Length: 195
Image 1 (cartoon, one colour):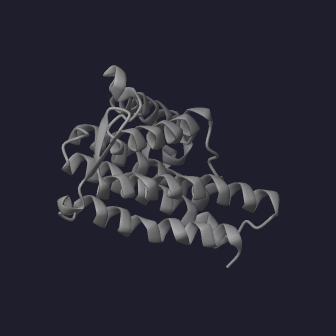
Image 2: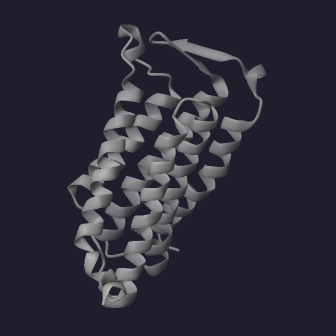
């Protein structure tokens, strides 16, 4: 259990705590206000946990590659932890009527479809479908959208700019675009179904 794998496990452990903070009725904890945004304390703590989890995501991959600590456990759990974190956040935000259900459905559909495609490619041809720039932009904009939606557009609320919502639709565009791109790259995996 090397350091990158420990960071991934920490990310997995954060997810249920994030979920509980977002769904339990903790209104008695009150709210905090800053930069023209009012945020329930439980939601603020959940946002801090989400930010911590996204930082471990960036860190564990860098450490694993730099120090040659790539393991099968890491290859499996790192993308799993990322998807669980993002999907949990979007489902909770949908339940809180912050994100439309159709947006969350598209995001989850894309994540599961691309994961399935990657598994097929590895199983059939031993090909690892590397993340390209649209996929990286998708991931970054997802994280930014979730953070600002959790923090009720903090900073941007001063000017009445719905920054979290803007990032949500940018991330939706790159979610669809990168998903289509992955399927174009991996289309040969389905060739046996059309013979």
